[in-house]
Image (cartoon, rainbow, N blue to C red):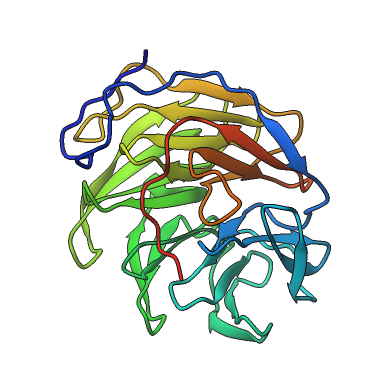
Length: 290
């Protein structure tokens, strides 16, 4: 069995010593959700996806409700703790919010290819600027703060915060690399990023953490999913593990949240619009939810 340390990453009833090893077999759940590279759970049974130019909310029974239309290509899609759905528009450089009644509002502009989105349990929003070589943070008033900018954030893509270890993880898409950056309680960077893992030849896109603090990275270039077993200091134990290969493109992954979605499965989507489920036998780390 694959194992990881329990130092600082577990709850009272959480077994982080024995983690079910891959590979796992993906299940194709549905198709036709094109126009976005991402997916976002609202924690109440809804999953935000995109069909054509319309953002839709999908239940576990694959019942769809239109939320808002007229959208071009969307990259990041995540729910804010306010209940609004955040969408990153790479072509216009905008971050927008869609309210439950479909009303669209502008939150930030002038971003350089905004891509990955992550909402932490405190409600802060973290975003990568793929073309700007930077990772930024937004507070409740959506005031933008640059967390890190520089060559180490070249083609920054996936992003996720590990509150237990006070670490921000993000990917270098072109280099196939996952980096970690220490942050303080205010979300300010402490020091410089350092490498967690590299998958040669991969184009690492979305990131997600499980309850034990292990990291999952989607290889958008090869339609694969890798896992890094991490110790208490987020050091890699062994080598990145190939968990699954997919028949069509995948770019992002999220653990199931809410009624109708398996909390111990990852759900993945990508450019063609296929939605996959991958049972991995462990639940995800806490995220910001409405």
